[in-house]
Length: 159
Image (tube, rainbow, N blue to C red; front, side, top):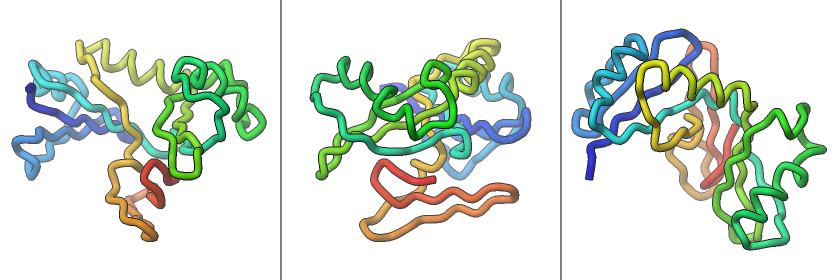
């Protein structure tokens, strides 16, 4: 199994990155510098939680491809943008039968992928930073940074 490298996008052109083999060595620099460290590794990109809406929706089917087709229209009235301008990622169904969904603007998603492609990085997954906060039942976890607050309050949820 390949080693994991985590690259975190922020509000500036600078990124931070960390290898799973050196978790205490967080580096900061350009995406091009992170791309050098990513060579030969499995890359997970951590995207700003402020750009991703984490929600849940009741989906009448268990078929994943039908779910993917239905979810945008099931959430349409809850979103301020057109569903055709958004990217939807399905999570798991919870004990109440609701499916977790991450929603991000397609422009944001395209921008992240374009920046990665420019430096030759192929990401295995993109994860909102909110979902990297620790989760415990009936507990809210909060990360307060300079200009941002992330809160995790569910196995696949937060804001």
